[in-house]
Structure formats: structure tokens, C-alpha cells
Length: 567
Image (cartoon, rainbow, N blue to C red; front, side, top):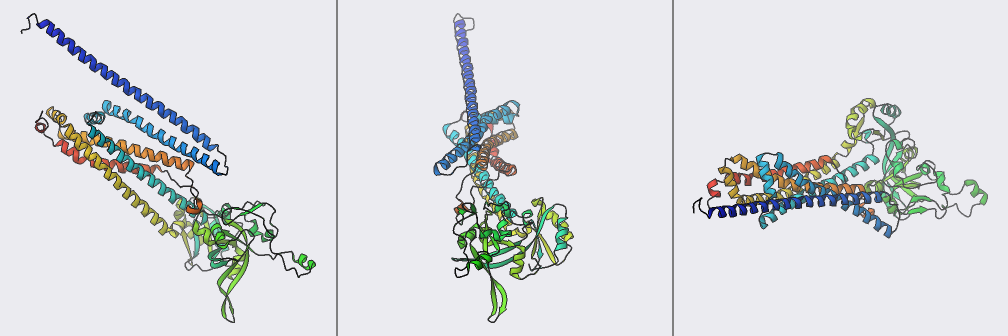
């Protein structure tokens, strides 16, 4: 049939109409797909906005919750806090998912040729198995990133909590002798140290190890003889004493033990061994009934004992409350007919403190400086000067200035990092080991990216061959597949890090309640650090990038003739 035959016009018209119909159908389909995508994005944005509103509402509700006791109120409090945390996680994850199409759009419009092809490959419809593998790759990388970021936050929280408790219950800088023996003439040294710039406070202390016994038990303790007037400038002892008393100073019973003769009626005077509030019970033991009433009245009632502040765990061990008596027994006593006799002295419990560290609460006790000097027979000598500085993190930089101010070669000056060097070195090593071990999970997840790219290369071998036939270089194909793998790994990394950040931030804000009798902390400590999350993101992206090298090289080495051989 020639072009001028009568049948040519109808055939051409029919063919043109068919082509026009096909083009119109394709345009309509593209328009429908575009509208669907826009509608889906709008729905996702609306859902994220709604979840964000729920999160703000639950957060405001949580902040206004009253502190009430009882199982029902505690359950309500836990549900509201859990709802706020879940809403925050869903909001941040949904926002991250909503940003993925926006990032792919920018790669397609403003990126290079390799990034354009890579973004199109990520978005393109794939075979069912390849789609499953791609989804598993993103999920595996997200899970690994989430686990690593969560573990780092929890370990950082425990380290920060431990550091806070150590710095709250110990001096930042300690001045003593190398043999930790007593020394005198400390007044001038104390004055010079307090004059050093950056020093907040300094106080003299007497330390010694003894045995403490009650009517039912005994335990080994470390006695701290403190200056009541200046100890609050160095450690948080006043803040840690749990007993709300009728006097303003929580150390009043220690400084004035005569107040323990007549404890207030029906008022909380201490915290019991189990954490319960202690009210005034039976009167303190009086003198014998065989004495004349006039003599008993003249003597003033029960004998006056010096005060002693003990930790909650030690109070549990000895089964004592505020006002009860304990006996301190020192092996270094006086010489008697039978040899060296232990020195004993009775004390009355003047307060119970809770530092949050079991080692301190179970072994440390505090009395006045003069009483400790008298008990250990030191006269006017002390064993330690404890110093607190403005910036505890830079205490080591202030140590030379304190050493120069002390100007005594027989004394040693150590900061808190040096004293607890082994502990913090172990924590740092444990944190590094955890980071490396959990990074293996991301390495395993990167194998899914390798499989995804290899399957993608097999499925897109025809397109690769065509691109090479049109002039694409091996480097272009290499960059294309590496970019595609980085996009897949980046999506998984962002999802995992965003989920970990949202969850850990929520736990840090609202808290995860723990049983203090089991864990000795009332909530899970969480430390959200931008440097930690940046390190996790960088490590995950690096592992995913390295994983793309092999499949990208395989795709770049594909020859056009191999890709088109069976077409």
C-alpha cells in the first residue's frame, strides 16, 4: 500500500488516533499517580501534625499531673507518660518518612546524572522479591542504628549519673598525706586554698575505719569527722539528708545532740530503714527508776550522746531510726592489762542520708570534727582537706594552683579523676566495646544492601547496557550504584537514629520508673548527646558506603553486549 492509496488516509488517521489515545492515557495515568502521591503526602503530613498535637497535649498534661500515691494514680501517670513518649516517637519518625520524598525530589531535580538515576532506581517499581529485600535492608540498618544509639544513650546516662553522685558526695580535690595519716597546722593551708581562684569551698575532715554495732547487728563503717559550718560548701550532705525536721538546718541534731532528748510529737523526724517516714515513737530511755525524782530531774533525763548521721542502707543493716543508739568500736584503743583494748563509744542517730550510691549509704557515717578528733585521739590534727571547685570537669587544671598554694611537700593533692581513675577508665572501655559490638549489627545489615544492589544490577542490566552504549562511563555507573546504596542506607540510618533520639529524649523527659529497692535508682538514667548520635550516624553511613563498593564495581564492569545479549 502506497502513501497515496485511498486506504492510507484512514490507516494514518486511525494510527494517529491510537497514538493520541495512548499518549492521553499515559498523561492521565501520570496525572493520577501524581495526584495520588500528592494526596498521600498530604495525608501523611496531616497525620504527623495530628500526632504532634497529641504529643504536645500529653506533654502539657504530664507536666501538670499532681504527685499522688496509690496504684490507680501511679497507673494513670504511667499511661500518660507512655502515651506522650509513643506520640513523640511516631511524630519524629513520621516527619522523617515525610522528608524522604522531598530529599529524593531534590536529588532528581538538582543533583548530578548519577544521583538522578539512583533516586529513580530507589523509587522505581521493582519485582516482589527485590522490593522485599530493599525493605529488609532499610529495616535492618534502622534496627542497628536504633540499637546502637539507644545503648549509647543509656550507658551515657549511667556514666553521667554515677559522675554526678560521685561529685556530690566527694570532694573535687583532696589534700592529704601519701600514707593518709593525721597532720596538724592545717589552718594556714586551709586559708591559702580558699583564696585560690576557682575554689568554691574547703573544709577539714578526719577519717577513720571502725565497726558500728546496734542491738541487732554490726557493720564496718568509715567515720567522717566534719566541720558542720563548712561541709555544705564541699559536698551535698545537707541536701542528701532525707529527714524534714522542725528546725531549718538538717544537721541541727548532729550539731546539737541535746535536741534528741525531746523529739517532736507526731512529726516526721527521719526516714526509716525501708524508706518509710519515721514519727516519734517511744520516749528515749530514761535513767533508772531507783533514783530519787529530784536527782533524776536535776540530771536532765536520758544521757547526752554525740550525734551520728548514717546512710539509709546502713540504717537498714543496723535496724536503727533517728534517736536510736549505736556503738562505734575502734581496734586502735588504749593499752590495758590484757594488751590493747578496743575503744568504744555510744552515739545517737541524728539523721539518715540517701546519696543514691549503695557503697556510700552502706558504709559512710558522719559526726562532728571535734568528736572524731576526740574519738581517734588526734588532738587538733586532721587527715584530709576536701576542696570543691567551680568547674569539676576542669579540676585537674586547677590542681597545680592548689599545689602551689599548699606549699607543703609532705602533702599530696589529687583531683577526683585521679582518685577514681580505674572506675572511669573501665566505664570508658565498656562504652567503646559496646559501640564496636553493636556496630557489628550494622555491618550485618549492610549485607542486605549488598544483596539489594546485586539484585538491582541483575534486574537493570539492560538499562545499564543502554546507558553504557549511550556513552556512560564505568565511573558514572559506579557512582550511580554507590549513591543508590547510600540512599538506602541513609534512609535506614535516619529512621533508626530518629527513633532512638525520640525514644531516649522521651525517656529523659518523662522518665522510666524503676524499683529503687532493686536497682537503687528511681528512674532509668538517659543522656542524649548530639555528639553520640552524630557518631552513630557517621558510623552507620560509613559502613553502608563501604558495603556499596563491591556491587557498584560489579555493575560498572558489566559490558553492554552482556546486558543486551538476550534482548
